[in-house]
Structures are given as C-alpha cells and as structure tokens.
Length: 275
Image (cartoon, rainbow, N blue to C red; front, side):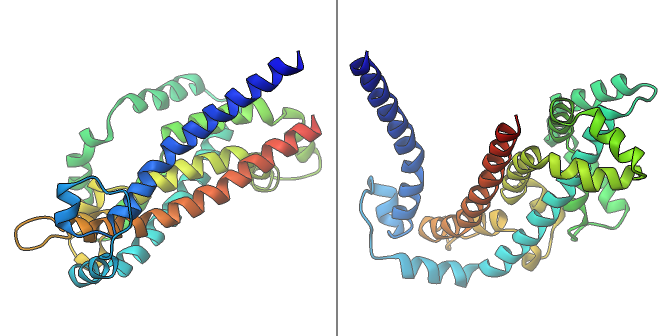
C-alpha cells in the first residue's frame, strides 16, 4: 500500500514538473532571444545566450521612449485595476445582498454582455470619446474599467457563498450605514475574489494594444505594447529590440501576479482555519 502511494506521488511530481517546464519554456526563449541579433533570430533555433543584449537595448531606447511608456502603462494599469475591482465588488455585492425590482433581469443582461466581443464596439466607442473631446487622453482607457461583466459575476458569486447575511445585519444593528458596511466589512471579506479579479484586470490592461493605439495620438502618451510594436528599422521590424522590450514589460506582470497570488492563498487559508 505504501509503495503504491509512493509511486502515485512520484508520478504526480513528474507531471507537475513537466507542466512547470512547459510554462517556463516561453519565458526562457524570450530572454534568450533578446540577447541575439536579428539575423540569428530569423535563421535558427536559439538555445543559449548571445552577446547582443546591450546593442538591442540601445536600439530600443533609440527608437522609442521605452521608460516613459513603462511609466504610462503602470499608471493606466494600476488606476484601471483599482477602478475595475472597486466597482465590480460594489455591483456584485449589490446584486447579491439587496432585493430590488428587475434584479434578476438586470443581472442576466450583465451576463449577456459577456457574449459580445469588445472589438465590435470600438468604432462607436471612439466616436463617443471624440464627441466628448477625450481622445489623446487616458480617460477612455480608465472609463472602460468602470464596467466589467465577468468581475460583477465573480463578485456576486463570491458574496453569495462567503458573506453571510447575518454579518451585514449585525453591522446595521450596530449603527453602520450601507457604505460603511461595504467598506469596513464586505471588502475585507472579498479579499480572495478581489485578488483574483485584480490579476485578470491588471494583465488585461497591461497588455491592451488596440484601445491605446486608436485613442492615443501622442507618442509620449503611448503604452508599452504599442511602443514595442512600433520598434522598426528602415525596412523591417527589429526583433532583437522588440524582445528586449517584451522582457522589460513582463517583469511587472510576474511581480504583480506573485503578490496577488499570496493574497489569494492567504485568504483561502484563513477561511479554512475559520471553517
């Protein structure tokens, strides 16, 4: 019996190691490719580091203001994530704990919008922003984050499962208003769901290419994805410089994901202990 358990555990570890290897290969390939010249990138499979990292970085910095784009992307992504998470939590809590007319119909309507690709509305979105004279500003990128159908669905499901009505009633009995209940009681309890949504929101906004390309005209206001895609030589794309830019852009994603993953794990562990 013990031998069978050991074999099962060994197979599980091998499977997890294989999955980890498959996940890490793209990152390794990205880092290795960023150290080679364009001719090598286009002609062969690269497995070992090269010597062109400094030259690729110099061409990247010479082509675009990469660190200005980095700062722009940090500002847009962090602000949009905060807005996205807050209003999704607010709406999800409202759908979960309040009874009002047409509640179920409105929630189904919110879910229905998830089936419509966002790209279909980009022309209308641009026209509205142009009429409001908000083009070439960050407002359109931030206003998009006020509504997130998936986030509302996630928050409502979490509130239904993890926030008892008795806690809310206790807050009302103690004299707390609805806003204070939401900020002091509900938001802390929604920690794991907030961390999960924050990961999706931050990664989505960080990698957003289409909306900044259409809305922003000033090159100094552009975000990283647009700047990296615009790195070109006289006749072709400069892949070496682009890979350096991609490597720079991936670092904040990994840091943010690692931090939020700890919040999710700590929240789940705390719930398990309480249970």
